[in-house]
Image (cartoon, rainbow, N blue to C red; front, side, top):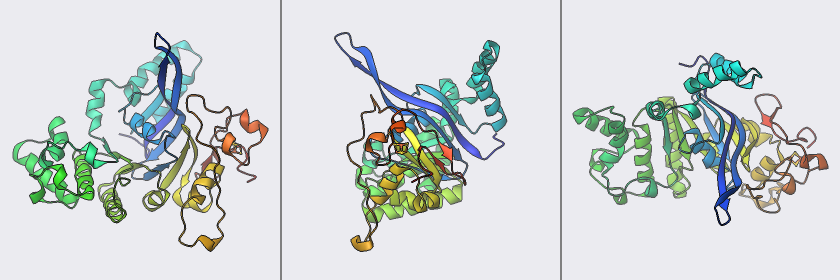
Length: 355
Ligand code: SF4
């Protein structure tokens, strides 16, 4: 459908959770989990989304799949670039008629405006693998029913065809016929995650949100699952958004990395560029925290002071300024925008050229 190589294009996406208080449970504030995020994912790439716990990574991923409704913003999934540009122009127009035209076109292009029916049709192209397979798999269902469920729900296969497709999916993830009639508790953590991956692959998706898929696994099993995901990506031409706080995992599996801090993306770039030449002070601090085998290497550790601020009342200007050792007074006042340093490496910091 699309004439470009962008699969997902997110514009000014916000996800706020209302906080209610007082005797009448009135809306008193918002938790700004995702705040004005612009972001593109190319077809066939794996983009790693990293940041501390609570920075909004998983919320961004789930909002993107519309598992959570968005507060505002647009999400374009596999839409022609020309039409997206036209729509953005109409929505930004001062003219009332243009904006009306834009709202009509939005229902056709923007995932956040799709009806339930239209979204249901798209579900098979967008899938998710959750962090903990012990919780994401129904303990009362047989493996064959777990893996076949999306095929049945989407009316994609029945009878013998269904059985054969389930078998093929299990084979793809390194399991077999003997596993079909077992329950999830009869498997190890790694095998359970393989079942979850088979289920995600059932509808032949284009895009899979990997929500910390290896965090709940033993280190040795993590490597097997990562290798499996990498092979599947190449063989099936999949696009991944890989959410994790584990930087070495993301270094291994991702083509590009996006660093998130307190609801905003502060740096994106190719994996090698981010690791070799991080520009944002927050990215530098995250990378310096990776343990090294030899503590005598002399690599300078950047210790972040203080906790992540409260997303209900984030700091003014650059949200990182209370913890940034390079902050100047103007950092407290103006919000840094993502700026291209070349080679698709974007940084949101007023001072990246100096530090
Ligand atoms: Fe630090 Fe200022 Fe850059 Fe924010 S904008 S990261 S406070 S130097």
